[in-house]
Image (cartoon, rainbow, N blue to C red; front, side, top):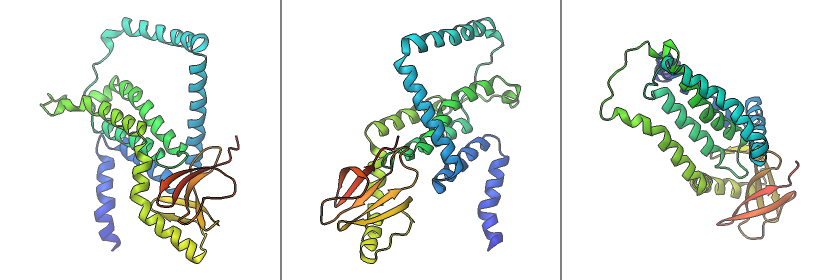
Length: 276
C-alpha cells in the first residue's frame, strides 16, 4: 500500500520538483495548502499582519497622494528611468511567460478568490495572493536579465504560443470581475450549503458544539441560541469574528453579533463586534 502511494503521488511530485518551471508554483501551492489547513498557524498570522500593514500603507499613500506619493514616485521613478535609458542596450528582451509564471499567477488569483469567499474575508489568503501577484512581475523581469534565464535556446513561438502574453492579464481581469460581483462567497456557500445544513441540523438535534471541519470551513465555535445555531469561521476577519448562522424557524440572535445578512433558507452571514 505504501509503495503504491509512493508510485502514484510521491514519484510524480518528485519529477515535477526536478523539472524546470514547476518549483515556484509548487512552493506557492504548498503555502496555499498550508494556509487552508492551518488557519491559526504562524504563517497565516504573518501574512495577515503583512496584508493589514500593506492596506494601511496603501490608504496612507492614497490619502496623502499629492504631498507624499507624488514626490516619492519622482524620487524613485526618475533615477530608475534615467538608468534604464542609459543602459537600455544591456537589457535583454523578456521571453514569453513560461509555465512557472502562468501557474504562479493562477495560484495567486486563486488565493485571492479563496480569501474573498468567506464572511469578513481571510486576510492570510489575501496576503499570499497579493504578495504573489505583486512580486511575480518584478521577479520575472529581474530573472529575465540573468544569464540563467537564457541558457536554453529560444524556440520560435507557434500560433498557440503567443497566447501566453495574454494569459496573465486574462486571469487578472477574470479574478477582478469575480470579486467585483461578489461571486466567490456566493458560489462557495451555494456549493457547500447542503453539507452545512446537515451539520447545523445535527448540532441542533444533538447539542454537539465541538469544533469541526465541514465542507472546507473550519468551524471554531458553535453556539446554540434562540432555536438556531451560529458558527464562527477560523481565519476570517482581522479585528472582528465572522461566520454563518442557521435559524430555520426564528429571528437570528446571538451573543456579540452586531449584524446579520440574510442568505435564504434560514441561513445568514454575521459579523461580530470590532475590537480594533
